Structures are given as C-alpha cells and as structure tokens.
Amino acid sequence: MDFDVLAKVYGGMEALCAGRLMQRVRTAHLAACPDHGRVLLAGEGHGRTLAALRKLKPGLELTYLDASPAMQQAARHHLARQGLEETGITFHTGNALTFLPEETRYEVIITPFFLDCFTEAELRVLIPRLAALAMPGARWLIADFQLPAGGWKRRRARLIHAMLHAFFRKAGGISARSWTDPSPILSGLGWRLEDRCQFSLELLRSDRWVC
Ligand SMILES: C[S@@+](CC[C@H](N)C(=O)[O-])C[C@H]1O[C@@H](n2cnc3c(N)ncnc32)[C@H](O)[C@@H]1O
Image (tube, rainbow, N blue to C red; front, side, top):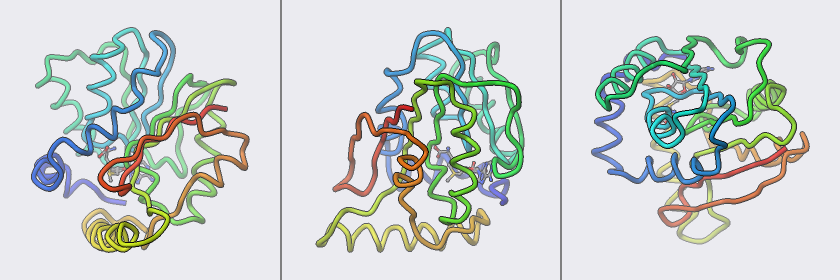
C-alpha cells in the first residue's frame, strides 16, 4: 500500500474535486467524542480529522496510525500550519492489517475514508482487529463513500466509485475494486449504528457506531 506518492497532492486534489464536502463528512460526529480519553485515528492520512479533533477536544489523547510515512509528514505539517501542537498525540507508521498499537484500549476509533480502501476479505480481518482495541461502550466514527439503495443516485455513485477505485488502485496501491459495506461486519461483532448522516445525494456518509 503506497500513498507516499500521493501525500503532497492529496489535500489539493481533494479541495479541487470536492471543496469542503469531505471535511464535513469527516467531522459530522466529532462533537460526540468525550472531552477526555483515548482516540485511535486509523488510516488518518493527511491529518484533517486529527487537526479538527485537536481543536474541538484538546483534552483527548490521540493516536495516529497510517501506513504511509509521507502522509504522516503531511499530517504533521498540517497541524503546524493550524498552529496546533503535537503534545498528546502519538504517531505510528504501520499497516493496520498487521500492526496495531498494543496494550491500549480506546474510547473512540475513527476511520476517515479508510475502510473503503479494502476488499471484503481484508475488512473481515481489519474490522475485528480494530474492534478488539475498543473499550466497552466505545464509539466508532466512520466517514466513507456508500452506494445508495437504487435508481439514478446509485448509478451516479457506482460511476464515481469506479473512477475513484481505479485511481487509488493505481496511485495508492489499494486492493479494493469496489465498495464493501462494513455494516454487516460491525453488526456481527455486536456494534450498533447510533447515527448516520448522508451527503451529496447519498454518495457519502458519516456513521457513529457504539459497542
Ligand atoms: C483514501 S486515504 C484517506 C486519508 C484520510 N484519512 C482522509 O480522511 O482523507 C487512505 C489512507 O489510508 C492509509 N492506508 C491505506 N492502507 C493502510 C493500511 N493497511 N494500514 C494503515 N494505513 C493505511 C493510506 O496511507 C492513506 O493515508
């Protein structure tokens, strides 16, 4: 998985293609985080959720995990540009499929535009691994693409997904060829959907799950 080549242009590409939309999806449920406690941000990339959460809830201990060192660099630059300090943030570079921060349990897990990088088989490994790091009663915030139930909105979303998956397979090395809904896997592990906000004609969604 190599997002290193994309790291420098990822934020600019996003702003050009989607304006503030993706950030609205990422931040829709951040206010539901507690004021204190531990939060794991997995696949956090260029640090947009990290910085927003730092500003909103400065008392939280944040753990950043991403496979790409260049993305981590971009996240740290973004924090600095926003005038935010790294105190209280632990940075890890690692593949979430094989590496996870040990011995810690989190009040909140956040996966912003991360789960849609994976095939169903990978999600069946990744989601239980992340879920095992959650404290009882933890929240899981998921910002992601989705497929609407039917009609032209679904056809539009399919087209956009196909373009994005083709691009990120080539440039980022992701393995997914299509979107897998993570909801059945989460439900199967005992998580319950508390709230869902949908955006851009149901192309995107921000979920809040509880265990
Ligand atoms: C589509 S980008 C999303 C970036 C950011 N979270 C956002 O909100 O836009 C996916 C991110 O997941 C990271 N990633 C992909 N596969 C990973 C893995 N197996 N373990 C950890 N990070 C991974 C990539 O390096 C990249 O930063």
